[in-house]
Length: 115
Image (cartoon, rainbow, N blue to C red; front, side, top):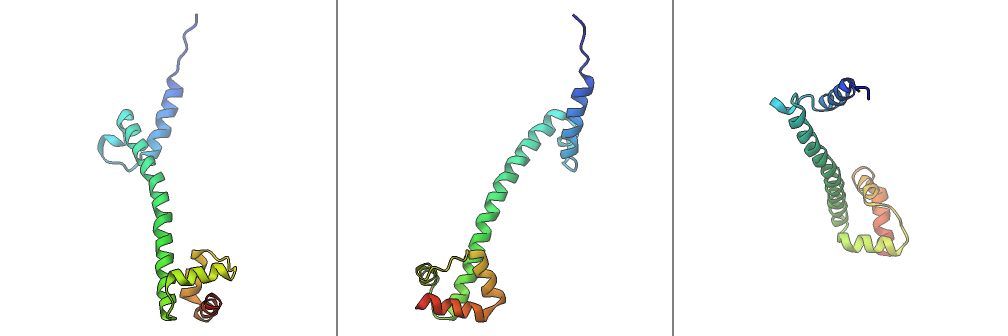
């Protein structure tokens, strides 16, 4: 049986990993085993962070809507319930943008929620 030289395949795999671990500290960037462990951990944190960012942004949107609704003497829960009953299907991101940048339109939404 002939001998198979696999040096280039391994080298390319290592190079690809080292390119992703550039900027890591100490052995975590240039020793393959350490770099691979660190990269897997970093990717797990990145995945988790993307989920947490969505959660944080949603709570920010809710806080903005609540503050704007309170200016019109309306609680957040009553405001959202009123919008649902009047079939206004705006998500919280859009509602918060309207609350921050377009107060007259938000006032109209409040009157719709009240009726």
